Length: 410
Image (cartoon, rainbow, N blue to C red; front, side, top):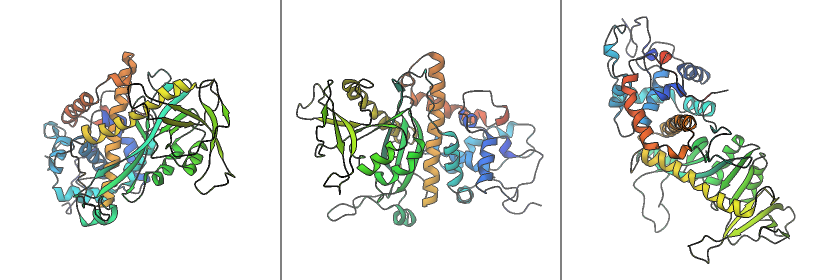
């Protein structure tokens, strides 16, 4: 007689029967098991919800955003009752049981899985992913609304809590991310309370940068220390800066750009400057008084002419489109995460990022096969197709799922 929370073995584990279509191919069971073991989440007894199943449940929860816990579990295991080798019907866990299983799992396995799998996916042949020899990437941040619980409110805080401001209905978690512009693949992320500014989160992302990348950032991100840290990775930078930053002309170039230097806010005597190249321009058809100012580590105009960098910078907006895909299309309009406690919020955020990466990976594979720019493939159609395929896949062993595109992990 199994104890409460245990299931009697039938010779085949439930976790061997669960599949999530493209998600299972990108995050194969053997990798999930390896990550679960690495994080010390392997069960000492057989449970209705073993750790591997809970990982896949979190992914399914973030694929079917808006569906209740028990409905997600039904979608995940739909068709098991029709499999003859499955001796007994599998009862859908209660919402409380699923919540306990998520807390046992914690956020760490999802974070480690993200670090293992989520890398830039563009190949040298990927249209729109490169400028000359550089892989185009961007950094930015956003916030997610989370449920109004005491634990979330105390840990994350909420906007509008200052003097004279209206208190927000929901606490918010802040997220900073690195995105490959040409494929919309998120390959680094860090989250924290609302009081932690993006500039404090971004240093946690920098170890994913390297030579051959060109990192673009908006003027809300820039700062001397962050510039030095980012350029120290070997990546090149193209950042917009505020108009009040002093940029002396040290040497003008024939393409209209000029050599200058930046210093930290406290370095009034400019004792420890960093050399940069400055590009200033106006956009046609807009307010002629608006001057855009970019600084870059690429100081040789022959390697990257000013007009090309000015046009290139606006690909930074691809990260805005990526965050919109996650929050609006994948999560649904007026998205509020469902987790009632901070560890669950972090786990859920990485679940959203993992699902998005899997979808973008298959979109990139499809675009390459068709010789298209990945931007020509509809994210919404891909998302809907993945949702349609999950119930049918649940009746198949993930180890026999038809081969398809997947992300290799080191």
